[in-house]
Length: 262
Image (cartoon, rainbow, N blue to C red):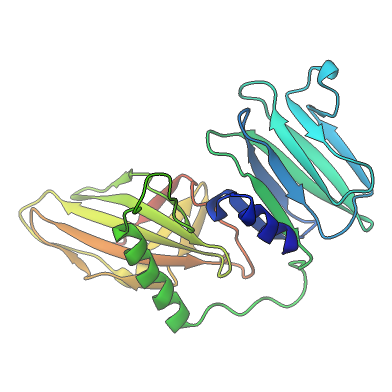
């Protein structure tokens, strides 16, 4: 956490910082770019690093350049080749942690790994009042306009505009906000009805899909019907994974909305 505070003091936005608990069963995907470095910090000195398409020597012509001092608990990376991908296996305290690197226009400036393994007792899900607070904070975040050029919001967010078409209506993801501590995403969705009749739907069955995995809503604010030739707005909160524990869902994932309707 000291590393995290130092990064914020040096001007790295909170939205550019990722925080993960250590888990040797997971593969962590980290976004890199050619313009900005990415620093990965661990809770203890690293024993060994083994990479693919990653090197500390630019003369090796790697896709990704690594900067690391032996015995340090952190390293930094930067793309050398446009569109390059790579991977590292990091040895720490007798365990191996797998990292995958992908190119991105908006990289992760810092990735902090906390000494909080996912194994063991599952964390308690956030209480309903906490989820409601996240929903209200998202509404406020969507209304806010930076007071001065260059001022950036503290929350990580995205406005994908992804459309999921249905027979009589469409569901558009207007905004996504991530709350790191609660491991929650809040979605603002616009439903548009193209027919002359109101379209009912089941708010309790709303969910989002990422690739082949479905995440049911933990909290929903929705009317249950889209007016004829009109629009409706839905807010839904997704937190954790369906099997329990953290999901670490990315705010820029390619999500689709599941709207159960007759």
